Image (cartoon, one colour):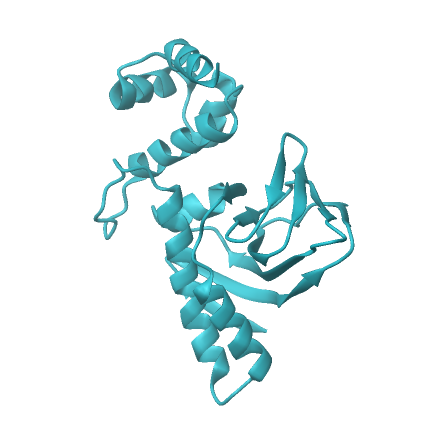
Length: 223
């Protein structure tokens, strides 16, 4: 078992693999603190979650985290070829502003993502040359940073050396509105760990809008 530490969190790599997916993958979800990183190298297929369907193609990247139910269907004529890496956060109790964002984002999907690092990880893992575990660990820390940079909005504080809880709350709010536009004020308050009144204050601070106004803005953008 390969382990590494990234931004205060100890992870273990529970699986690394890749190849052609010629068969359907039934609906399932991963365990607490478990994240599977998927990199589509070529081919076609479909990723199905409880809320959306994505057509898979070369360059796609997605993360399926804890309790996100999903399945995949294979294109029999041109099946997907992928690389996947499964990691488990062994101690998720003290995340910083960066690792907290990764842990709180249980699903993402991007059309274009550089998969060179994932390919290198798979190659090192399969060849098992001298000290390959050090190389795999180092590449995984780079990969998690690259992924989390995708999550962070432009306004996120660039210098994260010092802990800033409100920076993290800002990112959680951004992700919540992006991936769950129907979220309620109570649900959002629970996610960021403050009361509803304080949530309203943060929304005024970040957006100069109330919760209702922010929801209305999202509804207009969707339509």
